[in-house]
Length: 110
Image 1 (spheres, rainbow, N blue to C red):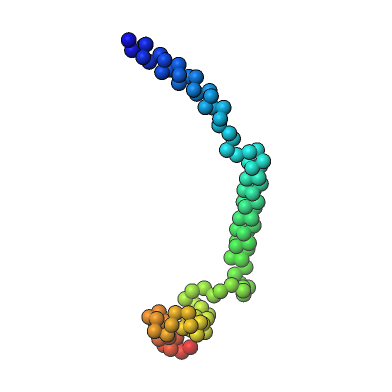
Image 2 (spheres, helix red, strand yellow; image 1 turned 120 degrees about the vertical axis):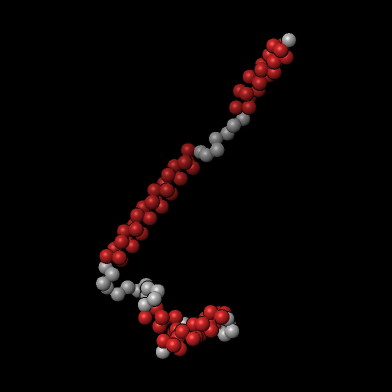
């Protein structure tokens, strides 16, 4: 009895599977795959060059660089105090952090 009810269902499932499999289209074409490989290689090369550039800058830290001064240094503090008008314009004079910056700059003598 069980075989009589299961056999037609199994046969229908086996017939439907190949028909459905024919409708599956490739999600990515070979051209798109090649383009992805190319773009990944480009990004890895760019990242490698950036790492080498960063390592070179760290090695030559004796020379002055065009980058911003390190936080906590007197140059950084002077730059922050020099930028007070920008912060006032951006956040307003009554902003708590602007007021704190004013007090710190006044205490530092800038």
